[in-house]
Image 1 (cartoon, rainbow, N blue to C red):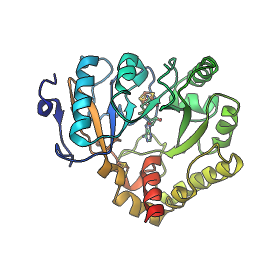
Image 2: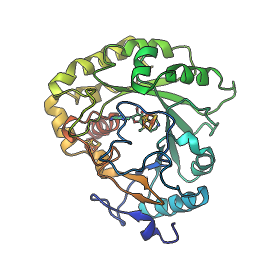
Image 3: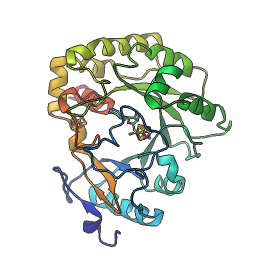
Length: 299
Ligand SMILES: C[S@@+](CC[C@H](N)C(=O)[O-])C[C@H]1O[C@@H](n2cnc3c(N)ncnc32)[C@H](O)[C@@H]1O
Ligand code: SF4
Ligand code: SF4
């Protein structure tokens, strides 16, 4: 792989070799130790290879390629994802040195490595134990709580939790916030599921109007845990159906964030960071509404 940058990335879906992308996301592995019900990464119609199906590039190759892509596209912030990125600890340790800002999104079931105070871990949990485990797999909630409990006192990297809100967990959000109080988690955010166009999981709402009770529940949990739940009020306001249609129709995430998905020994750019098979009209991704809220505030 990767002697030649142009051979190493297949730019597709409107992404350009000469584009400026301040943000990027990289799937550093297509392997994962969980199999979550809502996961977009392993959907059949997304560009991916099943667990362990193909050899992945070496750490040296990936570091060299990501450095070259940083220089080419002006990437400032890198979102490290997978699959499960903690399956490639060595890559993370070296990779976070490449970019001014780094966020690692992890399922939190494997021990975290200390990446210093300037990196942020975003640990995924989707409810209190029973609800989380129905979505993310039996035993996963306890594994995450145990991992948090075992972080050394001097562990420097801050930890945030992100919960993906679905029809399954929308009634249990406050319980999750309560369970996280008193742990090493500094704060949390709620994102809303991004469904496939022909969603078969039953975890997404049919319409944006149907989603509103879940949005209102996040607002209530935010009021109950001020400072701990960090969704902005304006970004929740923008999830009202008419506003949400405008936000997703001119998605800033699609414009500013370069998604790099591993496809065998090279990268490919899917339609957006949620893959190819997405229903934009029902997208509830935190990042999409957060960016729109920031833009409105500065307008
Ligand atoms: C795909 S995972 C990869 C990183 C890591 N394995 C994890 O679970 O955090 C990144 C995040 O996307 C979320 N996610 C998965 N499927 C989603 C979907 N259909 N819509 C919105 N978020 C989703 C996960 O819950 C997780 O918070
Ligand atoms: S842990 Fe992350 S990548 Fe793995 S299946 Fe769950 S959401 Fe997908
Ligand atoms: S699915 Fe969401 S993040 Fe992806 S392009 Fe559509 S609106 Fe943007």
